[in-house]
Image (cartoon, rainbow, N blue to C red; front, side):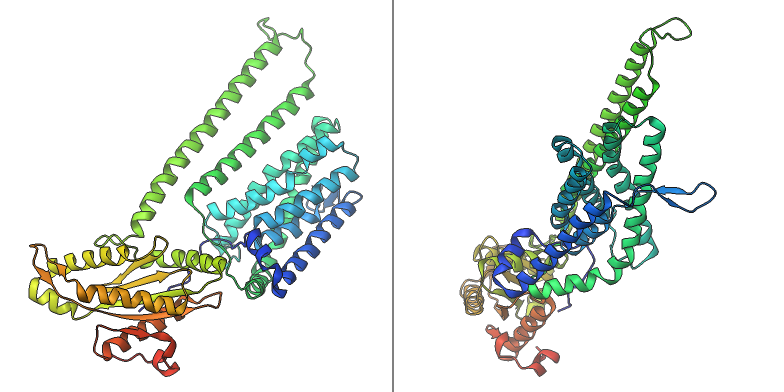
Length: 481
């Protein structure tokens, strides 16, 4: 059987619950200690940032570019792409809250303002997912997407900067300068993190994988993408409104001011503001609606693409995602993971004797028979031709062997039926592989089960091969059928 290609599907993340479960292991405690150290560094840098790194000037051109550097952003961004967004949001919010309180902002305003950096991190993560970008940036295209994500996240986060400036009563010119400094500083920091994402984060994830004894999660539903896109659109709309509000107040228009044709100016401006608000709101609703519709279509098409058209069971394309789910279930239940490779004996003889249509009917009935004898969370895949793979999460090795034997006995004892109702007596050969150690290697399990299935065929077919008794030489050079 062909191995599963490791296609990139987005930045990896470990749910907090998974790490909490691993606290009882030394490796899990090491991961938590490393995260706590980085989180503490982010908070400490936030306190230092209150008294420095604001209003810096990058010497570009005659005037230079104003910068506001907020180091906790870089630290928490690394955490996000190391462990996942929830791990970065916690220290990011804490650091931003400490920074706001240290600068004298009232508690209520500080609690709201502190969401600036967490929102920036979430939008950065979401943009990477929506743009289908590899954060290790192996190509220039990925780097370009990363730059775009940095611009989106920094602009959205700058809403917090505008809130800060509004609270401190800065005029429009000062606020505009501060806004540019906020955006430029954040973009510069996010870009500075890029080399670390390529050279430091991958080894850190591998280190975490070994200590948690569990692979990270990499799946993202398209409906989740819709939520992320909607959040980005809403943040940008809020940024526009905040800028318009500040511009409005900076004009300081007298209530008696009139237009050239004698109409009071303030009511006219209010009408224009209401029209713009409705226009932006309609844009957000329309964008969200179309994005949701496209997501539903995409998920339906994706579901169909992961199903075998003849038998209705999963195809090989679906194996990788289902395997991750099976590993997670097995790990959570603290049980093993079983995999059964099965092959219809002398299937070519069926096609030659009764025709390919009869062979198709046989495969459909076989899939129904197997699915009727397995559990809801087991997964059956048509691997190719008359070959099937059965994935058994939360199953110990001896239980996987028992399942394979029941399937073999059922097919041998009860003939399948042709389209005209006449019986077809067939048998199947099966090979079993299982593991109780995680993370599990899908290619190794497939190779073991496949070799065990070939061994069953060599022993006369209509039997079960146990992958646990195979030698290394057998796995490297499987016996011929």
